[in-house]
Image (cartoon, rainbow, N blue to C red; front, side, top):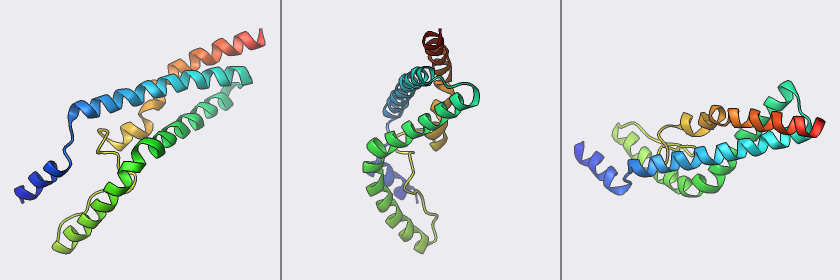
Length: 138
């Protein structure tokens, strides 16, 4: 069984420096876009829950677009290969692995990828939201 694990790591190695770089890149993108969403919410004059809902929807949309553009083109063929390997392992009595939304090749966990930027960019969103709301409404 150790040979199978060793062979899997040889076929698709995961380099921790690359995972850290990917996480940093996604955090930078989410911080920048959250500030831009704050500018948009302030100019639109959104208040209270509608502003936070705007931030939530736009942040999720940004993460989905990032997934579609950067991860899905390389992840879907890998998921198909993993599904084929999984069906072979299941037939042999092993447990299968990943689905189409698997981000473990590029990020530490799916939670970190899908929801990690929501809290990281919130302060920048609120700052630019209140700034531009005050500038437009003053």
